[in-house]
Image 1: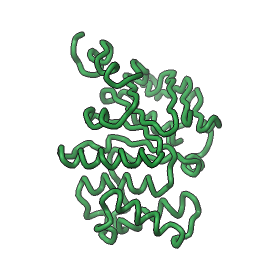
Image 2: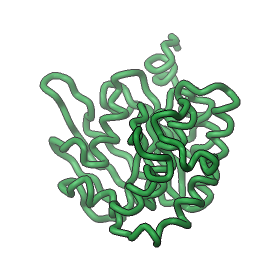
Image 3: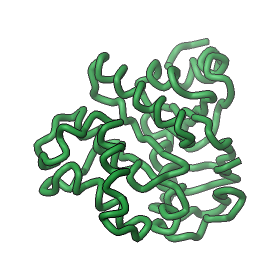
Amino acid sequence: MILEIEKLSKAFGSVVVADDLDFAVEANTALGIIGPNGAGKTSTFNLITGALKADRGAIRLDGKDITSTAPHDRARAGIARSFQVPHPFGNLTVYENLLVGATHCHDHAERDVRANCRDILERTGLLALADRRAGTLTLLQRKRLELARALAAEPRVLLLDEIAGGLTESECTALVDTIRDIRERGVTIVWIEHVVHALLAVVDRLLVLNFGRKIAEGDPATVMASKPVREIYLGIEA
């Protein structure tokens, strides 16, 4: 397993965002995470990346405990993420945004990452916009830039947080194709998404959270048809 979460717990007073979470992700696979608002999905990503400190439990990458490791060291070890609300460096160009992640995450010189940044821009449909200031981009373009910046950090585990939200159907289809390509290149993906049909087009397994607790995990079709998911996530009396 490339990523293992064991008995992970985090609470803010009476608000529990992770309640003894247990799950694992095999290398070169894609895990989808769904759940209602407030289920603890983004908080789980914040715990994995080190933005939040766990109250208890363990996070392991390639079998190594990283629960107390600093966020920048986790990034250097191969964990990268996108954010639900894109926040690019607005006054920098699209290319410069990638350059920040590519050079600072692994202490590379600019000359050593130019080719990789160009390849990422091409793969994410941003090459023609390389010299445009990031603050002028459309929502789809900012979403793609979130993805591109994460890829510039050379991740082995890529965490995607609602990257399809707010996109049109055609934009969503194009984004799914891009994410499939990333996966085919050997990057392990963990994807939080409310646009479930996009998620199901990519992932091998599905994890459902509610109030910080895992309520279902397994084959996507089986999980979506299960009684707890229909009742809690979909709001349908089963």
